[in-house]
Image 1 (tube, rainbow, N blue to C red):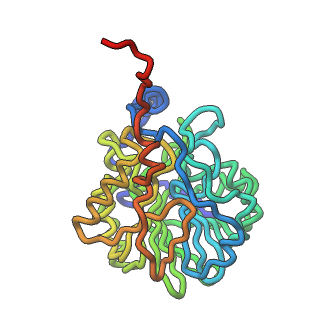
Image 2: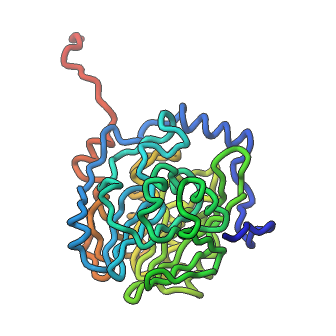
Image 3: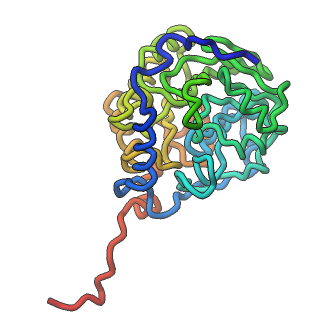
Length: 344
């Protein structure tokens, strides 16, 4: 495995990210001082997905399983990104952001995987219990520099781990996977900030060219990726967990649409939303804002329900599932029962 360069690539580290006491203060706010509406009041309905559904699905299919966890069927094989199946995005099971919904499919129902693609080491993208469960069920784990050591510690055979720096590529089971730049940061504790690299991914099959963004603030790297490796059939870009206090490491929904245009992609699927409460905005705000911006700028937006199959070649129109009766009921604040209140 590669060792992390002493000097990270140009533009890798944002000028300012919450660190030290500021990071600790934000963590306390995230845990105990959230405004109303950052979580739905009830579980989000998902479309149940079975192993039989996956087996019957044609090539060129994709499923959102939650947050940034995507399952692809490409070239007759299955590929998984940033798998997180745990109840919480946290180092412990008793504290931290709790899922809004169960995964559409259980871990033990997943088919054999050609590869697991990892964008970085944050808990909402790299989940230790999930990796341990998949350690011998994926042929290859492809990750940015430095992340491989964690995988090996968690039981993944070292022979199955591949680490890439930006712009490096690897061929896996007929696909070409290229690690591309992102503007973010790394670390799973107080003392490992930026010891591991982070990246986005370009996924090229014989029929499709896809972009998986991982996490990133908006930067000119999207234009460079588009110029060097685009155009793309579909971009999967974050739209969620943004805040004015960390503008360099997460995009606003409007910037998500601009990044999609910079990449030269045809269709946009917003991810990094609808599963965990990781910021201070309403849980459904990212999808509303990205929908509004995409419509205003003539961008073809796809918002599949969790567990629903997305045809990457000729997709059908998708629903605004967060506005469904179930989601709207979940988003409404509870109303006190006044039927027994005394009359004035």
